[in-house]
Amino acid sequence: MSKDTVQDGLVVSMEYTLTVDGEVLDSSKDAGPLQFLAGYENIVPGLEREMAGMKIGESKDVVVAAVDGYGEFDEDAYMEVSRSEFPDDMEIELGMELGVSDEDDNHQMAFVESFDDKTVRLDFNHPLAGAELHFNVKVVGLREPTSEELEHGHVHEEGHHH
Ligand code: ZN
Image (tube, rainbow, N blue to C red; front, side, top):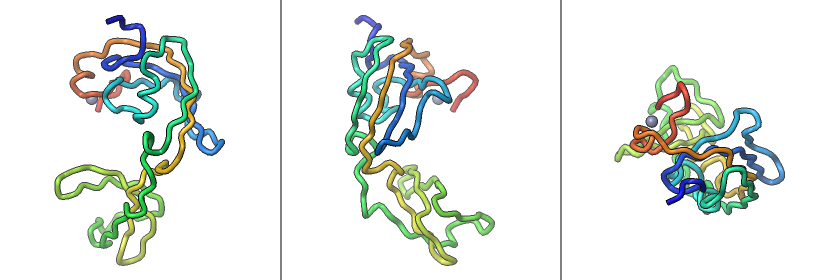
């Protein structure tokens, strides 16, 4: 298969702008192009699907519905946790992002929605849950992943490993 279009198993470099409700939330203008390994859920599914088959130099406007983006807003995605579950010296702040593991060791991100001396209320909705995402993307590079990147299912940027 020819490897000159976006397809599963290739590392894609893209320039992008993300706009929600007319406001630019994120852009590669500052940090440079974003790389992702296609086919490994590195980016939101609605965008990945629309980018399949794009060539280097091609650009596209893609509108992604919440369900294909960061999910619908879930009014039940809250959990109250006793303040005593947190380390004593940990300062809790509104909006702070926490990594939470459940009993099956599934790791999830949550945000502090409110708290008092006894209870911390966590919001498991992604900050962009419920939002329609407007992307402008341009493919600026395609390459084969290294065997390590394939094994991990994500891109290793230069000088940065995880
Ligand atoms: Zn890795």
